[in-house]
Image (cartoon, rainbow, N blue to C red; front, side, top):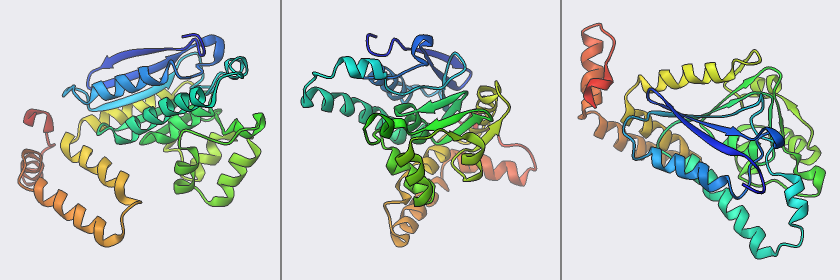
Length: 265
């Protein structure tokens, strides 16, 4: 992978798909060669009934430094059409993350910058080490954000904080973003993957179809008014009421036992 020298390592742990960015020389940078590889793994997971959650992380004590600036400089003579093709690949990856019916968790050690930050933001949950930093570094090289960064940030944080993050391009410490509600869990260094796996195990122990319905409801909520969202929620819960998952959940509640949704698969 010429531009990023990062490979994607795929490993299945029980019902969890672990995707690891591994490129020590460039701090797991990602580019147009990596985007479709990640996207393919995520899309293929949709066809695997034994996958209930995805954890996305980086090797070498870092999540991802984003785009390879050296490679970007070297391709300075590229045409606008070629540049657009590259961002189209990133956009397709981001959409595959948000539109996947499978919950995706970002496990961040060290930090995430640029497109790596955007990739984290697209995930359903973020777990970060206490010493991790997140950086929208585009402005420092004369660029504006991509990968949906402004879309996700403005829906999760106050406008003034988003302006600071994007206009200054300074690293923002994980504890600060945890306090602001962007990060689900802030843990000691070296523990982000373990905490993420615990969260993923909690998800996979639940009802698969209900979990997928919840992800979809959350995804579309911002684009619906209250009446529209109420109607969609009502349709989803009423259809689920007569399914196997609800039958098991309600039976377990009445019998005072833990629900076993796996036996319904």
